[in-house]
Figure 1 (tube, helix red, strand yellow):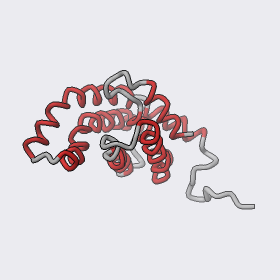
Figure 2: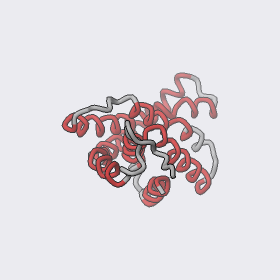
Figure 3: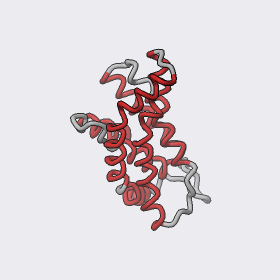
Figure 4: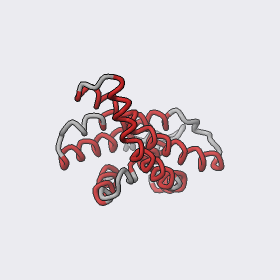
Length: 169
């Protein structure tokens, strides 16, 4: 279900260049589900390849989204709500701005770019990375409230100090 929530809006928003909810959803899922957030992330990546083709563009998705997951994982768990409401959108925005740079090693590998050609490729895509960053900034404003709502909805399945996430009889 979480992967479908990632996949559906992404496909519906494809007419907008680099504007989507993926960064916001990845951060939200990671803040709530921690390591288990990798499951919907990689199911989404698989669905994207299945529906759009497992072409060269797809391979960087195997690591690009995981970088945002990893950055989110190292954020302090005890961040105050006031700070979190600023930090989450900023991290989401920075991932969008850096998307071309993160994607570039795969492009260089697949197309045989040298360092200069890779820099030219990054520069050519930078206007789209700016759009991506701006879109992520605004979508990122939803991370804190969605995280709080998802924690409430999933309170019975989330682990706590004294409760195992696995129900026994």
